Length: 129
Image (tube, rainbow, N blue to C red; front, side, top):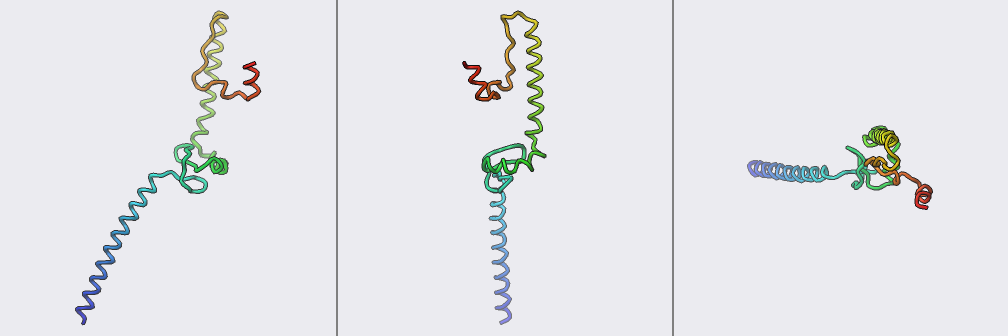
């Protein structure tokens, strides 16, 4: 009777170890699959919009809701003012160099972003008319 009990306990322990090993493997696969995805910094759903190095969002309302907290650490917003300042310096340099040349030639606009993109609809209609 004792031998039978010992045999059953060994079988139980073996089965438990086997199930633990299988579950650990499944858990690791789930973790690996999860790490491949980006998650919304606001609501933790799967994200499709990327903001900066470590922040993504599922939609624009989540991005807007999270912005007051995120703007303190956003690497994209930290570089944006510098890029705008660089563009202004380039424009001023081009304007100064074009003043010294004849009135027929004009300096090419900087290749950063066109001024049309930053104009309001009223300014655009003024230019086209």
